[in-house]
Length: 390
Image (cartoon, rainbow, N blue to C red; front, side):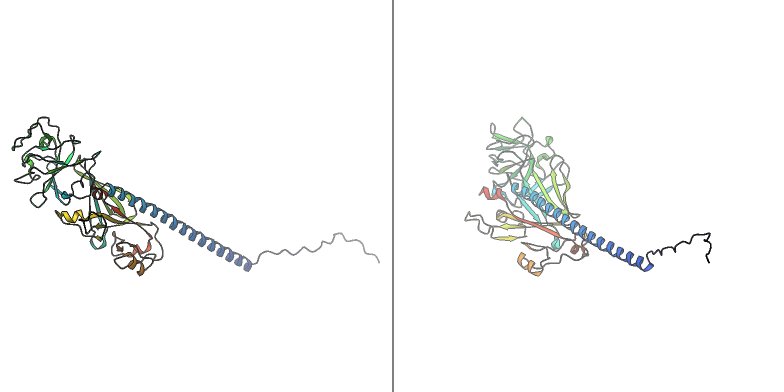
């Protein structure tokens, strides 16, 4: 028996559709997080090493340039002053206007040692006069109240030059004095010893320069002043430049002789140590210049032999990376020579003078200094104007 066709067509069953399960989603998220963490760690490590390398390069450049700048002044130290070696070590007295009397040492270089390993200070002095500023001899006694020197030759001496008067023999009662050449065209100037008319003269009237004191008060030795046979040294405008470390930077201080004030500026940041020593020649009589010893002791005032013995200085500049490292990368060294310091630890900061450990002057009680990397640049700098004079 036939059945009639159905009024509605029969549809096939729908296909089964599947999605991600919760476990699969969690596993995918976990894998993604692990991947992100790994990539982040790699990027952080790469960036850290990049900053370390970059800061290390900056420290290299800073240290090299700082040492070069100091070396440049060391080469010029003593220019125009060392021609008269018997004057080295003389106490210099200078007074500008109503300011207090200043005292210096007539020496190409003076090193002031920092206390307990703190950074040292180096001062270089030289003449700025062009050409060859040779000393000239005083031919007539110059009492303290005189306002002119009679000299063998006034060659190269011009108005405005700062000069140093040096007695025939330096000592506690016969020091050196700074005065300034004036433009007074009427010689005579109060030299009570007379004579000298028509001779070469160096005038230093007190009313025309703040560097010249009326009657030579407090500057010229009394009662004898500067006798015949004394020497005048021409400084020009005088170069007096001091290198020191402050606030983790190398500073330069120079004397402005026009205003008698010291001017200071930062020249290289991230320089945190400056160490220096004198190189001395123990045998001056053989005229064979050699450095036989290194010392941190500065000769005393008027110790002419001690100052003549200084033929070089040894300088170390320590530049620091500005990247703070998570781990300790520098340790304290020991010993008074490079070899013993280096033997104490390959991560110690060493130079030819021994260990350098005072690397945190701004916070001496902290150990933060061990989390920075350092570059040490050092050199032996001959005081060539003293050597060439001989």
